[in-house]
Image: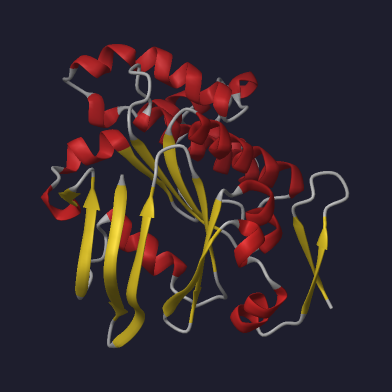
Amino acid sequence: MMRAEALTLARGQRVVLREVSFALRPGEVVALIGANGAGKSTLIAALTGELRPEEGRLTLQDRALADWPAAALARIRAVLPQQSRLAFGFTVEEVVRLGRSPHAGRPSMHDDARAVRAALDAAGITRFARRDYCRLSGGEQQRVQLARCLAQIWSAEAGAERVLLLDEPVASLDLAFQQAVLQAARHEAAKGCAVLASLHDPNLAAAHADRVLALGEGRLLAEGTPDAVLTPELLQRLYGLPLLRLPHPVSGVPVLLPA
């Protein structure tokens, strides 16, 4: 659905990523991992159109990303940044409803109420829909912003192709909120959405991702299932830290611990 082909990206005069290629497919959660400065946010900025690659090609539904009208793109691709600042005294429901802005004046606008209800439910925040957004904790606000993104790309059409990009969505959240956000992402993937989430913790990638992209040394060093990618050898190369890998006693997924 969304494809990057031989992307080379720079920040200022520094080349951050070289010849990175991968695809995002409907129904998958893809985790993007790498050390600080590896280029995770730079890559997501390219996928959002915020950065233009020096070389390579980005396509969505086999159409160049740069050729998409902004409003049409916003109806099928949403982005949750690391931080979202909002100083106005909106209710939670009003913030989530902002996500429906790209649908104004189109037939899909008649689904606004359904989309907002579904997004509140998916993010697990229906119970405080009437609360003041500015009075919520940081973790609660992040879940509201996730619901806004879900409302933005919600479709009444079964199997509609959509993309959800999450830039370090759980970096400042406690364990419960981390699980809630990633479980909501998994729920969207189960409905056919293509999800990419950049994550600091490889254990979260192991628990929630279908596929892992490992960025390091300016390149995509590995791509595959968590079991194939999350090896102590590769992770030491990424993070410079020796790790032990053990099977989870219940699920069997890899668990990584400092050696």
